[in-house]
Length: 99
View 1: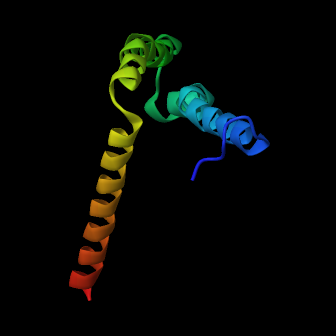
View 2 (view 1 turned 120 degrees about the vertical axis):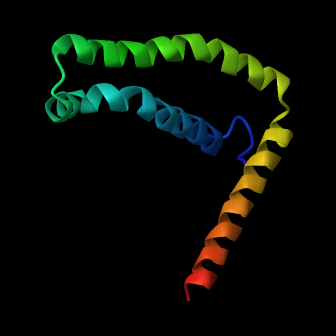
C-alpha cells in the first residue's frame, strides 16, 4: 500500500524511486572504463556507445511519458502482477520437475 501524499514516507518513496530510476542512466558511464578495457574500444567508439544510449533515451522518453497519460495505472499494475505470478508459477513448476 502506498503512503498517502504529503507525508514524509511519501516523499521518501518518491526520492527512492527517482534514485533507482537514475541508476540505469548513470551505470553505463560509470562502467565505461571497464568496457573500454574488456572490449578494446577506442575513445571514439566509447563515445558513440554512451551517446547512442542517451540519444535513445531522448527519443523514447517523450513517447513513454505520453503513454503514462493514456494507460490507467490500475491496468498496468494488473499486468505487472499477472506477469509476476506467472513467473513465480513457472519457477515452482521448474523446481517441482527437477526433484
